[in-house]
Length: 295
Image (cartoon, rainbow, N blue to C red):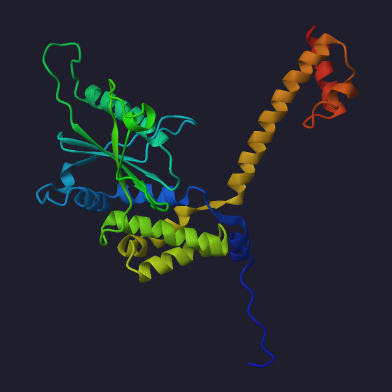
């Protein structure tokens, strides 16, 4: 109506929109959350082994390596079907043959954990039971002429027969509406929304809306919409904390270097400060004062 003014959004909601952004790992977060649910893990197993109509959810055991330590060993998804088969499933949006090496490392760690869990005597004469491994990579980039299988011997040893072999089957989706195809389609919709809207809340919410309309992970997204938005989003505060941590680490490194230069006694505080953007003359003088107190 004429003369009416638009109602302003509450300050806290406006602030939330400004402070929130989509994580760089948003798609990874959805992948992990999706397949931690046994219902969807079962759908994944059925997509990999459609001939098996007997296995139930109870037979699936999540054995994913999760390490919260920086640079620790971790993988996207691993699960066991009883004691028969061991599945490792990684997902990639950019093509890299290094996935073969990573999968080999994950497999070795997972077997190690399995043998410990079983109290297997690897030094005894009796042959231990080893679950058969199946290794997969879900590739969400453009397929073009990518192969269906990649192998250690071919990619790293020129195809020569060698003491160890690793073969990873590459899954591209696109076969019907199975859970793999749905996840790949989800990532493509999200990528398109990020192109249009940046790493914004709108990109996330539009991805969810479009996917539900297209029957892509609809049940998962509809039932957990708030959770999915939450796991795909981060706060700028988190990014600020990381920047502050990095700046602090750089300053500490500079302080140690300045301390060594002061001990040599060849440069003034002003000259040393000129060598470091992280330190002021006052900082150098404070370090110098501390040195004299400890001598």
